[in-house]
Image (tube, rainbow, N blue to C red; front, side, top):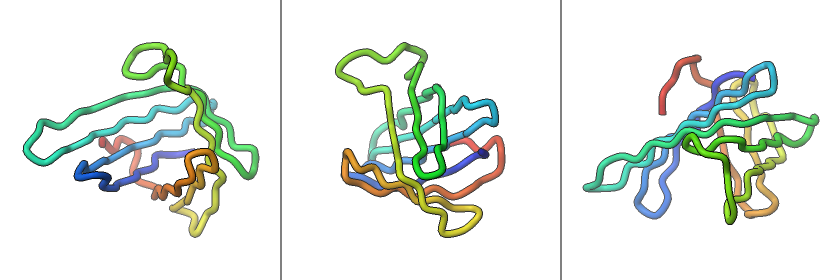
Amino acid sequence: MGTWLREYEEEGVKVRRVLVLESGGRFTEMSRLTELDSAAAEHSHTGDWLFDGTNLKRRYTRMDGRQPAAPVVPYATFELRFPSRNEFVGIDRVRQREVRYHRVADGTKP
């Protein structure tokens, strides 16, 4: 549970992603994408989450205020490792990528 931040750059786009995991099993994911010489784009998604002891599983119920529709797959599953109390590394076995989040103060914005 808590508020987690992931920052990265991909193909010239800077991404700042805040993931809030609530105690009742709901999550909010907010992101801000900034491209050189362009206005920033912001997104907000919500859904349900579950940690089974190995995997963080998320089911998106709203993506930018709308219910997800094909071709969007409204699920994300990451195998988690905890290098420290305030950091986790997630491995997405489907997309073959690794993500790293660190704990931040509640109310942090993307």
